Image 1 (tube, rainbow, N blue to C red):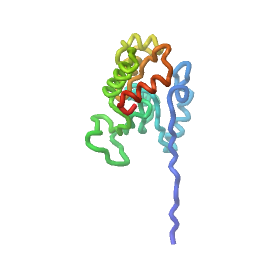
Image 2: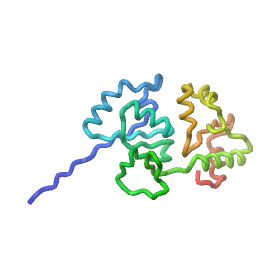
Image 3: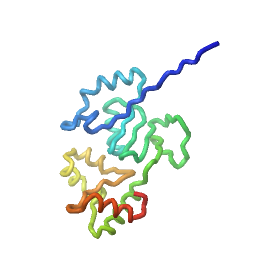
Image 4: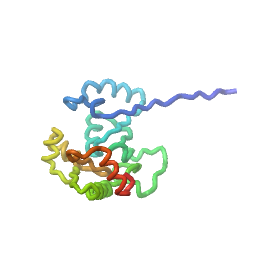
Length: 180
């Protein structure tokens, strides 16, 4: 009689900002030895972030990471190199990577932002309305980083108007009837 051994697969899920990236310098050098140790041990490191695919692609290359990653606050999961543990519908296939869409496309998010603004009776400025230079001023990012942050595929960060409470924004989002 043979006994099957069950080996648990470890997976590390990590945010970037303030976790793998230093909150002051955005540097990652101190965590490189840990990341290398995990890679050598065969432990996947799945990045989960509010950043865009463009931002994560750059950081993954710099850090030497090759595992799946989740972008724009859970809007999509990317599987680099089409290394999938399951089948995806054809429409979910991209030329570079495969993705599993969990949210909506940025065009829908931008339409939702306009609907919310209309309900509020106040303009709402999203990243798509801002120039790269304005994003740099607001975030302190370099020009290249601001361009990557502006390259939204699935979400639309926006500037919260002064004197509008979170509850009022949430009610306007619900009233927009777009599933936000």
